[in-house]
Image 1 (spheres, one colour):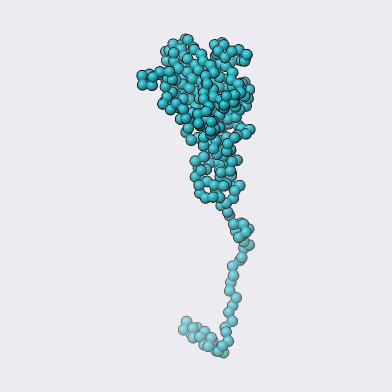
Image 2 (cartoon, one colour):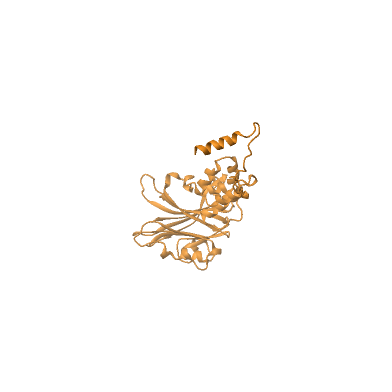
Length: 318
């Protein structure tokens, strides 16, 4: 090994000074072409509006608001009204409404912020409530019923009180079409002293989706009017109320409401039950021994001769 090292040193020393040693060519690895998705001109961007529009369709309202609060770009993209229309219709599970007077983001907030009609009026009478869901009116008429059986042919020319006595239902005209939201309210007896009476009243409370955003409703200009009342002067098995769009009375989805034995519960089940369809809503609470019911129908109009924007069907024990 010593000889070899010496020979190599001597050989290197024989080269004339100033003359560089020629180096052999280095071994190079293969060069693959650069993938186009890694090129500078096609770098991934988080700010792709079409992408976030699709992502937004899978988020709930709270998540959308949080995303919109991230920065100005997200606020502009996420607050697009088409996104909130999609989310509102999806969560309410109703068909599209032809036109609305407010932004869909405001309608969504009004529908899902936990507000109900007794928060605006008669708070001292309110006990409890539950959200039933949403349905739609395609026509400008509504059938209000205190029975869950199919009403058959409605004799619209009869007086309101006579219709209630003979058919257990009545027709309401000039109803505002569109999306309606239904709640079940439990309130104190409205005719007794609050401190002396433990009586309660069940109310099927339905309203147009735009109602809570209307200034005349907020300032108390619009009030409920009694449109009919009726006494059931015999034992009632249950306190029931229903609202139907007569245009869709024979639809398959409405038929599920009339199949009340499948959803009202057993006779000893005292919890309120509700059923909602695309164009109808109904409630029922099974009752213990009683002497009958007093049923009242109220409607709220948008002004003196305006469209009906809210409906209530109330029952209390006689």
